[in-house]
Image (cartoon, rainbow, N blue to C red; front, side):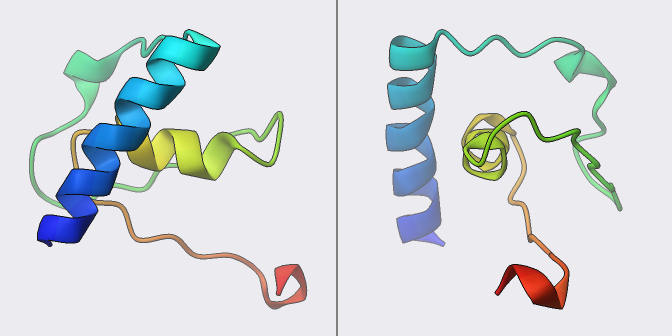
Length: 67
């Protein structure tokens, strides 16, 4: 968990600084409980950016053909 938190802070600063990522509607995300995030991917960076800027730990899933 410490490694996840460290990398998350590092990547969040990197993406916000380099790509000027802006998070809108963050106040609507519950702090605990189940949550399903279904982004409409614009690029292959989207899952990494979403994981970095989200306030919660995210567990990703993908279809088998991706691997």
